[in-house]
Length: 362
Image: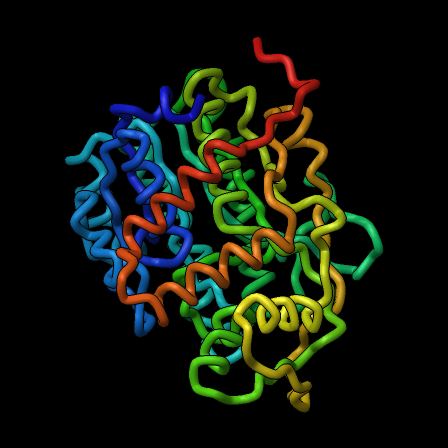
């Protein structure tokens, strides 16, 4: 269903040099879309974008979303039909040392992308990616629903709460009735998968420790998170982009894309599964610092299931296994082309995608 829709579509993607952006670029290209990526240059070493030569599979523009003039110019020249906005400062712990950069990038940068798209008549569909951490987290033992209050203890989480509020105001101010494009926000949980080398993320940190022959140090072993393979939320973004394009503002709202309840696991359990699947490594608990980290956060995904027909396909266990397999092949198997292997993982996911059987299309 997705492949037929995206074949030939012109897609503008911010943050295409990042982890999720790299996977989304490849998936869109696999479906036959024409993709223009707009982003800063990769900021990790190594980076999936460079290791898999993703720059050769899309039109490539290195730029800052804070540069509204250039952003608008590039978008207008490309004339996209669909925009996926993924560019962000995505690291919670970095927001403690870089609060201004976090707010500039996440709030003003997002506003710039929304405004650039408003000046581009070709745009019909806009998926604005935020995070599960946009909610005011009271560490309740149930998943948050889309209509619950925005908030955030740390500067990253609160910046994404601000993006949600700002996006809603932008929609009501400029995108009502026949004005402009259809825009929705998408909130996902802890996303894992091969090719992520960002700092202060559990599985990339585990992989770094394992390959350095060091004990895996974790700060908060009892913290509970919704773990999902990167292709899970991406499938939600793609489906949402299609619905916005085909049926317009009926779907212009916020949506959670998270795993099933049995995929909400403790940090310590995830780290141990990484060791088990990798076949080596040892997990130890490192003394925590003074930076606040939530102990419990879950999403309610009923709305995406009922309204969009979307359902998660992989369990957390399968997501961890697929992620570890990717890293093991990257570090230990010179005979495997990682671009081809990544495409194989996307194709395998496509073949196994689960849809809500009770969902009825128009």
